[in-house]
Length: 315
Image (tube, rainbow, N blue to C red; front, side, top):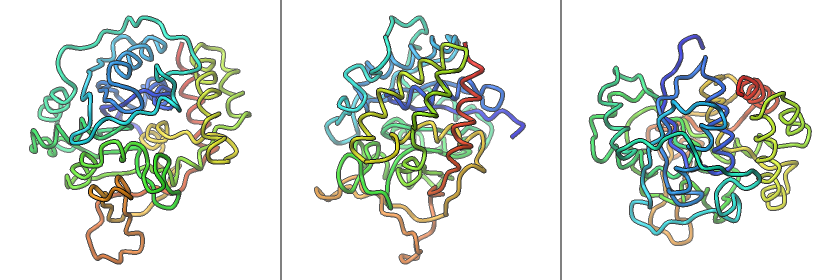
């Protein structure tokens, strides 16, 4: 990819979000990060916003705008994941009082204003938390679809089963009604679900390569991943914890690392048993038109090499 791709990163940091943000900040020659917009998810939005600012400080990128967004899902009470990410959302590292400022205004308004001012089909939205901000922007200003090139998101599960309930992945479960709005927006969508992120495992040797980088970012990410991997390794019995959100950044930079299929995806919003389930029409049995590029395969070695190379460019 030769042209720098403008994108908005919508996030709920979160340990794997932190790695994804640092990944994106290190890949500034390939991607143009317009802003970080925060949402309640892994931890409440006051924490996710502060964490986003801290992460920009770590990268020496106080110039990146950070906008606080939705503090709760559209219709449901907020469900968080402190048991995975810790009370602050960034277990495993020391948190300081951030220098990177929080911008005035709401994340949803920033998204709307940016897309309205953008050239047609030019800005990629990258939500890696609950889809509340994106859904609110689409509902409030349907005309913004003209500015969207693609939505590349981390969320959902089909072949891999759920990680918050037996049927649902966390991001979609937290705000299934928002996911329903986004999937019905009529714009190109790529989803990186648990089906692929569970193939991007954090092994000891991969952490060692990050820790050996001669900069602060490598050691920070190694510490974060050492804390983060412990929970998922125990829960899922994998060789290491799956690294979810950075897959979105890798897809932006090197989509050839991934393989998937154009399918129809719907979200369950009514059933108490399967709330937040992503129903993937893998074999085209419904005849409904495809609305998602559903990713299932990853070159994990290539992914971790790209992550390591990008982090190496940071302070």
